[in-house]
Length: 69
Image (cartoon, rainbow, N blue to C red; front, side, top):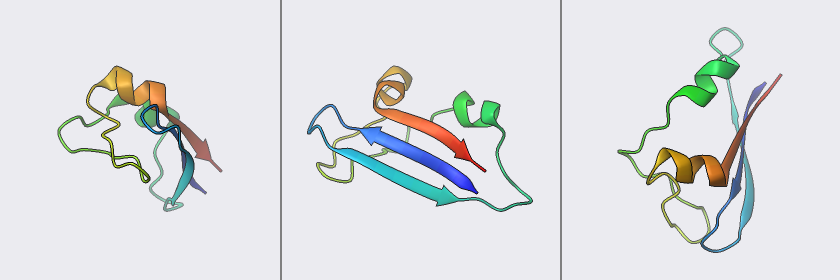
């Protein structure tokens, strides 16, 4: 169980899959995963360190979120 983030950085072209395990008792719904993207704190590409979340649209174009059961 967890959340799989698939990152396709448009700056360096790197593809990264990142999985975060979630608690069986406290897990986000699919709607919660797609509602809010924080643009105050930088989310960066693991290879080139460019910012992925300067705007909501930029984040959505580079990061795909999937809930895994």
